[in-house]
Length: 327
Image (cartoon, rainbow, N blue to C red; front, top):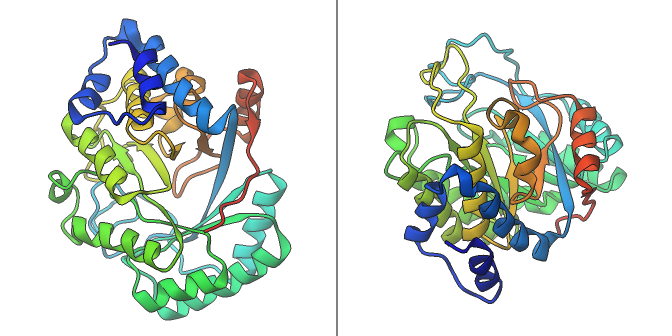
């Protein structure tokens, strides 16, 4: 495959097929750099050498009734994670201040659970209003399955983006969780779009899915028209049902990121959880197809030192993208 030619065709309006996307995942390792070069042509056309930085604030940990096999906070997890109810408005504001000082553009307010209570929505919306008054930040909320009136309140408070990952393919969904349906996930993304919030939805790779499942995820997100696509690589946490799973290598992870760029050329592709343990020394190459990363720690696992991420961007010759999302 001439990846450079395919990239230029995509910039002229060509849309890759599922067969072509699958061939990306099956690219021989010796052709990996050419594949990444093609994905970089697309990424550079839309985003230049800018990288969006995102920071998570885990505002409610554990205490979740869901049975997601990958999650250390689920009801079936035996992982020793910290558990607490939703943080106060002041604590959420303190997280925003820290994100702003770290030159992070998007502040992600994340809570465990099936969905938020009205009281939790009120707490988050109060915090978001003050964040918007004090800091130049894009605010993303990730609170689970929403009701229409809750989505409207988040929009009115100033939430720019809402994250609700599909996580895996529709075919593989019940192998990962049975406490909610694949449609529950899709419907929440559609709901936030309807109220005018920018949709963010992504995946977790490495949960015993097939390559075809990964391709199906990419095309599902294309159909959903998600503005931001977080690509997580399973960090199999001891105490979770997927503990001990180790199906990934850095080269395959790079192929997944490249495939996401070829299928969703205009979208923010974000390297997310599991970046450090799965891409390892090849992390910098991930930013040739992707244009966004999380900085700092994740929900219950640690990220690498902030200084290492800033150094990586400097070494690549990339700059931080401070542009805001206007939903």
